[in-house]
Length: 290
Image (cartoon, rainbow, N blue to C red; front, top):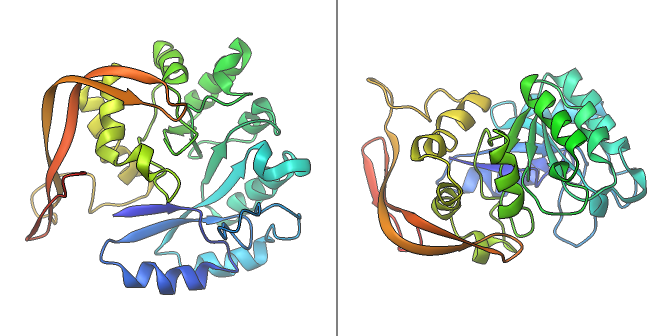
């Protein structure tokens, strides 16, 4: 299974379901973008004008129609996206999420909005992605923000790695891990502009091993933890009577050099390499790229 992190909004979700979800072998779930248009791939921000931000009525209709697919409301709360609107789109998303009984999946980046404004709006069950980005305004840059993020985690806010093309810094991750702040889930943010750097979930997992997380911690954060947040009962665990949904991998020992989104390097001694997947009774060999 894979999760689409907010490509479609209420005005584009029908097309997303028809031309993506219904046409691929892999099961796809999704977060619905708070913007009506979602991410059109035109280079235009979904908040170029405030009008594309959906109202809850239209969003509710779409969520009701696709409850089996939609797991959260996506909002990109960073300066390059929201521009002059600052914290307002996140406030809209917060109100809609409460009304619909869904968590928020919040992309963070450079200000505005300021990180303290974002953190103040987060509630238990919400998830922050790109939690270890290295952009200006990040939460690890000020002790007061570190304390605020720790308090948010303590009240049930969850952190997601979301590597991506520009959203993962080894230096930031080291600071967070040294303070005992670990990601709840490890994800790739794999898309057309990040695939040559990110490559695979296995490589992202290997980077977290190189930063000192244990294999058990890393595996939990790509299996049990995300399955729990997505309310999925048939994945993320191995138990009698359940359908097999497994990845078989090896761990290669050696000397490796990994790169983050800033092209900074970090040495590692273990590389996770998938060799096969098992779904039900079907076994498929993995490609060399993992």
